[in-house]
Length: 144
Ligand code: FES
Image (cartoon, rainbow, N blue to C red):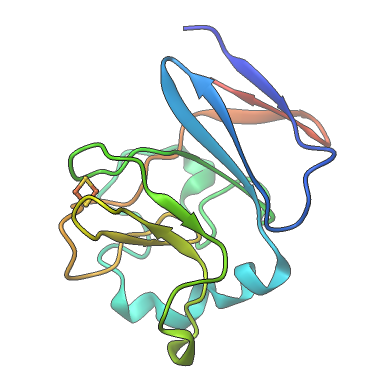
């Protein structure tokens, strides 16, 4: 399928936009500094914090799972049975444990952090998929 480009120059911090790629929803989140900083806090509660179990692009094999830490790009489909998780920029309950932001799947309760990494003890088997993408200039992302 054709690659799709997204202009992220006007995105606000914390905003999520969607593009469609090969019939799939792809999310682009402009993470806040606070979102980036919380990523190490809960890694002992993740199933696969380093994304070792998932085939994914080399540039996603890091803690923030992205080329640039502030931009997270992922396929917005739950890895359990394909529902659409809800973006929760600030609403996760376990604030005391340093996890405020992520994605919640309403179908069977899977939770993912703000890098799409799945928590333990939920039905989703793997982290969210990171699609192939690149920056064609500072604020243009080409997915596909
Ligand atoms: Fe998301 Fe089941 S489809 S938890």
